[in-house]
Image 1: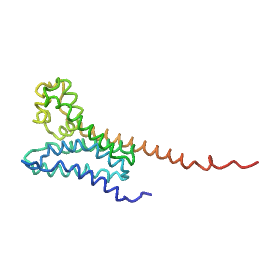
Image 2 (image 1 turned 90 degrees about the vertical axis):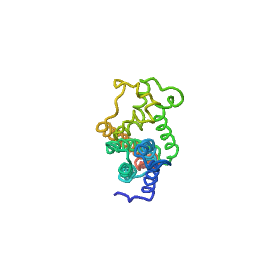
Image 3 (image 1 turned 180 degrees about the horizontal axis):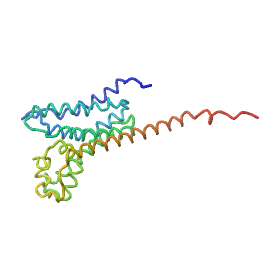
Length: 237
């Protein structure tokens, strides 16, 4: 019999959804920017999924509250902004895949969310910063290295799935040396392919994490409460 949702089942997804919504805050000089919102969501998706998984959110529909809420928020911000996201639905599939992967990892670390959240957020931020860091400090990386690091960035994945020409965005173009990255080295993610693929892979990782967590829980329960056949004394003859 299914157990009813607890307050924590609602509280954690709502909390991580609210943190993701911080990317929609307007800047000092302009309104909310959908591209900036997607940068923040890309960085936060995997840690947010980890938070829900580690907190023990039991109902998949509740765990999916956060990425679903960001879809609606992105649509609102996109509609109000002069900037346009050509294919936000594919971007939503990409960040949902990142969220699902984080959820699966969180299931393997129940009750210990904060270290995993911090580690995943720092890892996501590092992957996003590596392609452009040296360009801000000195000179861009060699084109082959910059191309591979752009491929690994969650921000690149989400932005390009949403239809943003990320390699030509001012935040990336000069620091990453995009002008020197030949199409033979890298082409942008195609949202209609990369978005669903990221979603399927993320859901598969979530399923693996949930399965391993259940198996580990059952093994632990058997160790604490051995079966009657193994614990009961043998009858006297």
